[in-house]
Length: 99
Image (cartoon, rainbow, N blue to C red; front, top):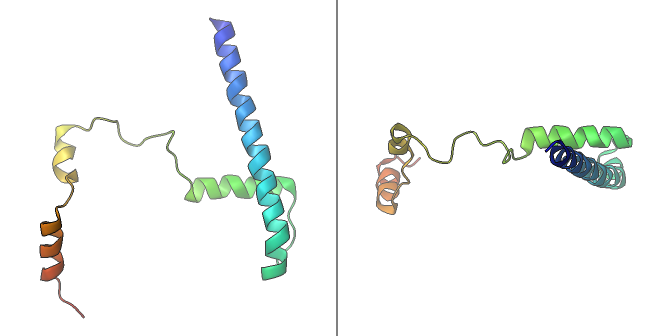
């Protein structure tokens, strides 16, 4: 049992290292080849590129691995999350004043 978990943890760590290495290098090369020429900003190092990648993932990325709501919502949430019909959207747009 411990061996299975050790292999899984090692596999996850290996995937994280590969992703950070690949995307860190991609950010590094894209930044160093484009940004200094266009915006006259300085060249960055590999670790700055990894930090920039992580920061942009936090700000703009998707946290799909960490869902905010469970798959089945309780009944009191379903009432407020019903999708709008075309007629309801048209009626709402027609009642708004145009500038």
